[in-house]
Image (tube, rainbow, N blue to C red; front, top):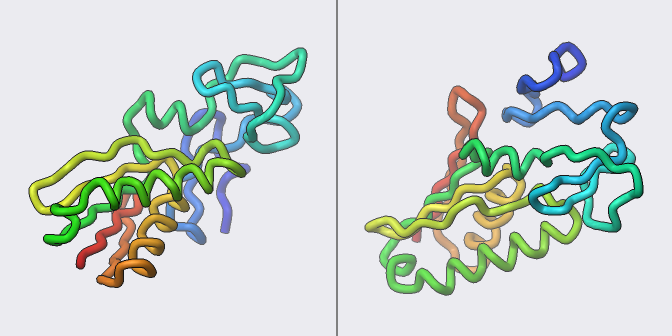
Length: 162
């Protein structure tokens, strides 16, 4: 069930199928085409993408830049274990490679922060898909255990340990 059409502009919409909060799409008739002044992403034909800025584009901050500005991550991925603490650079490189690969098609897929913790490191992302992709990549390449759960606010919290 999707409650998005009933939400007033600027509020978050709850989508139980994905179990996360999504920002409603900007109304196409009013904001299309649009350009994000922070990252230069372009909103055109119902989606954000990289490309040339249309002539009469409106200035609208994209959802990823808005999340970064407000410090509201969509997901966190905590990596724990002795191997993570010893090889932080390698695991950071894997996360950055996955971000780059996903961001080619969708500019909203961004790492917000990578911070070391005593037992490993913690990543925050602007989209749930990026955190899931990084977690699955780590599990496939290095083994270990990957756990995921949504909190009451709809934020994905993942934990990978090895």
